[in-house]
Amino acid sequence: MGSYNYLGFAEKFGTCAEDAVAAIDKYGVAGCSPRDDIGTQTVHLELEALVARFVGCEAAVTFGMGFATNSANIPALVDKHCAVLSDSLNHSSIVTGVRLSGAFVKTYKHNDMADMENKLKELVLAGHPRTRRPFKKVLIIVEGVYSMEGSICKLREIIALKKKYKAYLFLDEAHSIGALGPHGRGVVDYFGLDPKDVDIMMGTFTKSFGSAGGYIAGSRDLIDYLKNASGGMIYASAMPAAVAQQIVTSMTIIMGEDGTDEGIRRIRQLAENTRYFRSELKKRGFIIYGHKDSPVVPLLLYYPTKIATFGRFMLQRGIAVVVVGFPATPVKLGRARFCLSAAHTKEMLDKVLQATDEVGDILNIKYSRRYGPNAAVKKDSPSVVNARKNS
Image: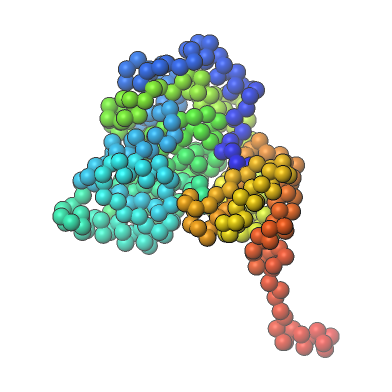
């Protein structure tokens, strides 16, 4: 329950595995060269064209590592003359990239649109706090699904603010691409928005596509620029062909271009599993964070001493689950994080729920006052009591 295998494509059998093995026979194990030198192969170009079509952008460029897709490209997009407005809970890869860029950075409270607008207005109107000179550009950076909170960004409102203050928007869809939306095309698809309203679309292949690496998609001018300015293109070895082929095959299935409905079936199964698992945990009295449609399901443990214990007790019952504490979360907000998959059957989820229920009773972590054993008992009003006596 700790894997990001949202759509279940990380399989050792089936079409994806067969195509990946065939790619080794055709291209070899690795290119052993950066893309800018002689590392680019036909499968990379096929993948980038497919990604661009999938997310609805003019062009895309791919990289061999998800973390580096942010940390190596953000410095190519902003510099010391620019400002970055970042959600306070953005991923470490974003934080690293912003620090390396030298840009002035402000954070706003997580998913708080009022605080975001106040900070954005200040950056646009006041300029740099030391020189008061206007910034060359202001870049807003958000995530589609936040990996420790299970929350979904308020993209519609963010796009409205971006347009109002003439800023640029960088959307990290690492956990939302493939996992959200009726067509699996991420948070833009989920809210029914226009991909052209997002200037820079980033995502990874390590989750829904059962592979490795990441992409950036946007205008053709943006992608042409990154191909010549990004450290990930100039210095990093190219993505192995088998890895790229795994993505091509799984994305083709998701898009329904394989001639089957397997992709849409997996997307719907993930959504069904997510809602079922979340609702059942809540009924048992656990405090659950995040949006109802997010496949990332944080269960609050709070006490640092219960974090490792929860993980061990679950493992004893045959369940592998990620447990997280400080500094990845605030000291008093330790949690377990479940990740749902389309490959999970109802029987599997029920086994996890039973084990979680048992461990929850042992550790006394059913904190909810709305559901479960600690639910507050609603007392009838005096008028209702008198009516019963007189009946």
